[in-house]
Length: 156
Image (tube, rainbow, N blue to C red; front, side, top):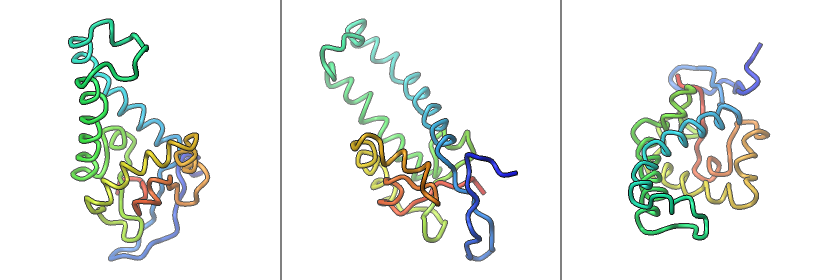
């Protein structure tokens, strides 16, 4: 019986015909949770050192340039670099997933990976519909995957 969180794909012909398993919604959620825990474990000690208890005062969205840098800029750079060099974040690696080009199943270009990251904003803004789309799409692509021309598959 197949895993309910993954969808087997039709054979895609390349040098060696192989079965591809697209990583589904819940495994991708698990990967995101793992990544979020890692980011918090790395950034919160610095943020607490800089801002103290003021960090938990939610009267302002961002408390200063250090919070913007540590909470938004550095994680974005880290995610893109992991995608470029490992084809996955630590969370995706933990669940056995990798990001590949949707047409060739090969390594996506740097431009695709950067576009995929910014595509997350397109996926998130309309009530997270682009993320939820993964649950219903035959190839388990979110809008960010469709925009970048990528798919998330079980690591080969």
